[in-house]
Amino acid sequence: MFTEKKLNRIALLGAFSMFLSTIEYLFPRPIPFMRLGLANLPVILALELLPAPSYFLLVLMKVLGQALVNGTLASYVFLFSLTGSFASALVMWLCYRGLRPRITFIGISVMGALTSNMAQIVLSITFIFGASAWRILPLFLGIGLVSGVFIGIFAQRFSDKSRWWAAMKKEALHESP
Image (cartoon, rainbow, N blue to C red; front, side, top):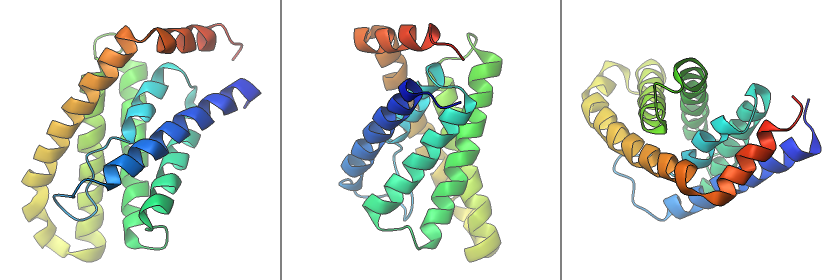
């Protein structure tokens, strides 16, 4: 199931995600536990390289890595990140598998960002803030939309223009399942 090449790809993409998470940690957050989503860039790009089990292992690595970098592993923020990341990853994976080539990484990224935000709002309503959490929904979705477009544009351009990435995709395509 997990060949050495697949594990190496997961590790490389996981390292990129950790690096981007660390960079993102330097930026101020507009709302507590809300990020711009830079660490999702490798996750979005991985849709072109990894089968489902490997893809979701990468998502788990991203969440655990972010929790370690941010010091949130033993907090409710980890639960929010875990839930938002896996809901987002599932929707992005379904969009990529079901709607390609009619949808670009921009659309996939926006769907993922909005799904993550909605999952986190539902958790906020259910466990922490109650119905008053609905008040931040417009701001949350607005920031998610903008960051989703930004990350999607970068992912699309990188996928289209990078020779290194093209070689990675070609190698993954020729690998046995």
